[in-house]
Length: 373
Ligand code: ADP
Image (cartoon, rainbow, N blue to C red):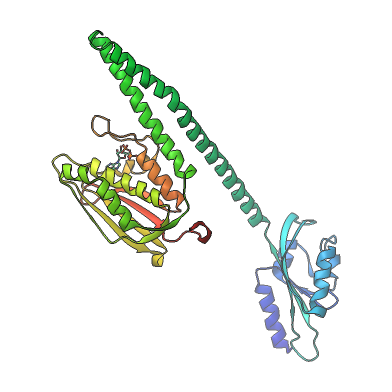
């Protein structure tokens, strides 16, 4: 290698941000770069010409690593991402990933050398462990919440059924024989029990988004939308409303849940209408990320939604209107969000610029192979 070539290669090695050691065939350090000295807080005096196993307090003197390094030149091997977790004298406990390979001689009178790259992954590993811990905790608390919702709603059903049954029996046996005030109390009691039943059923349905989840399969969203619209036909006829839609794509999904999703969104678009305004609903679609995602929109010309409430309405039991205005249990959109999130998508609401509301759902077109039937 000429002097200028040597100079160039030294400059390159020094600019590398990864700590590097150049070892000769006897595994002695020919040179180390600046990043190495910075990381290990060492000096050339205590590094160059030393055997790699003697560096520091001998922290590289690991039999397995020794064997790997010794094989590189005679057997033309290399290794990647060999992890070493050690307490280093100057920098404490660290995890390093080691990569080593032969570099062919640059000239006829030169020997091949080994380049050993040392990457400090301590922080990355710690961050990964933290993310993993949080994910586990989140999964645990989700599971606990889910078990609670499923068990509570299931177990509450039975006593409630009894309240309704005996209440109804009582009403029939005293028919006409009660004072107006007592009659009113009984009617209210039965109404409240019925309402509670609706809420509990809603909770159960919410829990079932994951407990009764079915595998993904290719689902034609146009067909799903048409099926939902035919279910809503009588409500549509009564309101005189009209629904238009784009040609919708086929996506990998749980077919029943897609139906539940569109049923809730279209049902709401029809329900939250303005008095004296004929409902006009449009289901739009747009392909995103070169077809990897699809964006569906359900736009209506109803009462609209204020931006400040647009996130809140996806929580369980959140309603913006009294029951005298609009019937409902406040669970529909929470179910929608859970369905969409289970599919790896997102859902948001916003006021439509032309009045009314727009609900935007983004879904991946394809799901993980092994999960698709
Ligand atoms: P529910 O329809 O049973 O009230 P949802 O969870 O479906 O429950 O909706 C929650 C709330 O979000 C509704 O009570 C309503 O205030 C609001 N909302 C939902 N859809 C619309 C819509 N298309 N236009 C205006 N407000 C809506």
